[in-house]
Length: 404
Image 1 (tube, rainbow, N blue to C red):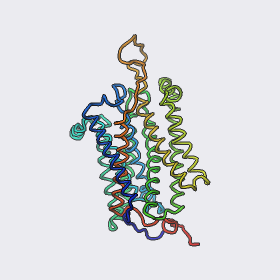
Image 2: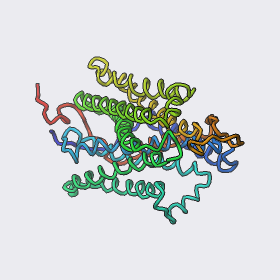
Image 3: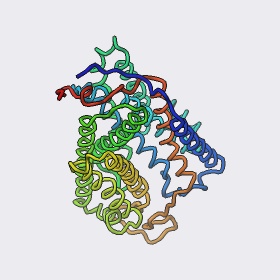
Image 4: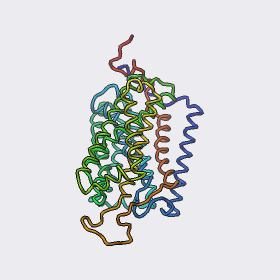
């Protein structure tokens, strides 16, 4: 492999500053939406006593899971010794930090009382998975920042592999913790499954790589740098493998639930008669976010088109949001069994009633604001620091390249 050189995003055009302005505008709108919900109370949202995690949580969990997956590119280089991925590592670490920052911003501002975070940071209930995740999220920031230092400081490069291995282990634990938030909730039939933790890990691979590939293509094209077919093809095929893995775990998850007689109600709700949740599962998650992009990534003809691969990455993101919507909101909408194996005569607490939920504009703006802050942080960072390689042409990035 030729010696890789990095330099900041130079020669910024009007278009670059225009993108920054749009992202900043979306962020301001999100902050305004958060203030509106905090000032008036959560009754202005679509959330209720039954659905207490709304659309902001959909975006927040998606971004946190994607942050873990975005670091996968750097891990392939330092942990598994794949030289082709080494030039891609710095951007991988940057995206991991930026996506996590975006997800946590949404999560904190959706609390209704963001200052209550101080309580969560000073008083710990170690029987709660939420308390564990505070350590995991803060630790992830620290670990990845140190990892970036090892990669960007030449004299520290010798430590990049052990630090990369530690970061790889930490990100697996972090995603396990995020999936376990739902897996440990025994009261909900849609949750309470050990399969959710590894399933979220595989989801993170797909979501993170899809976002990484979108940012990489945009950054290299916007700065006039070459992105060779070797790197592009490798990332495209790897994305296809991760999507296929996600398909497998979704299949295992639902087959496991179908095997348990108690879960037949939630499975019928999600797969057959859940209305918007059934539509989002089959059309959004499985077709748009899974089958179509997987065909594009694996098909040699379609996969050569960078426009179609860009579309595939966008579809994976859309499908990921649909998956989170079905899991988080659909899981809450299905009625809880307050007294299993018992029949209640009647009550006024919505027993056996599917909860209604319709996302409000402030919720959507806050969620989109998390995406905006992640992209804004990434854009500013690549402009100020050398995260991008000067070239990813085949002759530079491919260790096995042979001159014609």
